[in-house]
Amino acid sequence: MGKIDKWNDKVWNFFASVDLAVALFIIISIGAAIGTVIPQSIEPEPVIKFFSKFMSISSAHKAYEIVSLFDLNNVYHSWWFTFLLFMFALNLIVCSIDRLPSILKSFKTPPKPYPLEILEKMPIKSTIEINYDKILEKLKEVFKKKGFFLHLFETKDGVQIQAKKWSKTRLAVYLTHLSILLILAGALMGTFFGFRGSMNIVEGTGLSFAISDEGKAIPLGFEVICDNFEVEYYENSGIPKAYRSYLRIIENGQPVKENIVIEVNHPFTYKGITFYQASYGFQPTEHAEFRFSYIDKKGKTYNINTRFEEKFKIPGTSVTASVIDFSPALGVDEAGRLFNMATDMINPAVLVVFEEKGKQTQQWILSKIPETWETPYGRLRFNELWGAQYTGLQVRQDPGVPLIYVGSILMCIGLFICLFLRPLNYFVTVSKNKITFYSPTSKGMIEKHIDEIIKEMKGDKA
Image (cartoon, rainbow, N blue to C red; front, side, top):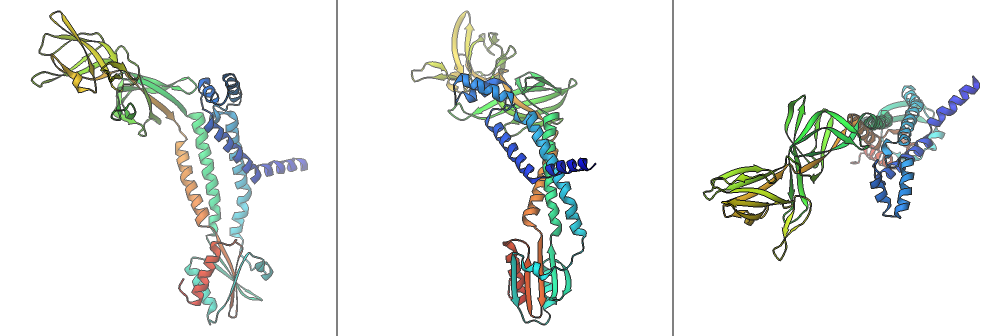
């Protein structure tokens, strides 16, 4: 039993070690730094592309093999990072259990006077001489006014006062420990019971699953439909100013949420799953519709929806028309020639064929250039190609978020108490007209507090 107890003590002391806590904290920080620098992707392309900036392609492939071997491209879900977090949590729990009883015992232990030899060895000492008949009563009054609890002892050297304030705030460090454990628990819950993925939904369609970072389909239990997607660009620029999605939620064949608008920094959450606006792209499909507004010569407006090469009639005329070509970003150069600027829907344009009595004419109509809307048959404005864009959504479910929020709040409270409400301990000896202040705490605010007390004892303004 003696050897078993000895081994138990060694194991306990190992996990109760502050050195272990510091070492684990450093290693976890290094791991987190690696996860920040190296692209976190299961697919090899982003990682190889990253390393190819600093080395040859063949070396980049070898670097990827090493990174993949140690899960450095998936740090926060790797076994070793999870193990480090578990060890850190265990170390924190053991440290707290190991030191808490002695602190609680100190609260219950009745105070006793300190020998003068011990007081003289304390780092702070300040002595004043004051002629005052009721010096002891005045000193007690000043301390109580400042919120101190007092214990008085009669000694051979006179009266010894032990003044204490905020003694219980020493427990705030355990509040901080608890907050760290809650944050770690929340992070691990998100890792093992949550998921992160993405969805690319074309306008007018819906999806009931997301694709995880590992490439697996994750059923959502409901369908997300994109009714519309729009992008705003800065004037005379192809740089997007804002882009947003208009969504609906369908569950068991019935709409449960409608008119949902999400954009960058304005996510939407349903059943614990949060959707973030992340990207967009151009992907025309069979159901895509060209949407026009036709204004006849009398000023009356008609809405026209048609598909590629599908004939439609110009209202109030015998003219038929159809779209035979499309460009997502058509521009005009200095010579007046048309050219494709980009693949994004910066300035969408359509080539429309008009037919009247067997005679055909063609005209490019550009969405953002009103001069091109004028035709011999009236004003035909091209509004959009609906169903040709997709919205890229980031999807995340993290059941540990509430724990992380609670832990963060508790950490702020604990740190505030530890930094600004530190325990104050004064030892004061009173003999005749002489008062000596002692404090075991290092210099700083303690000296300022003692100076304030001395000024009040002398009757000066603090």
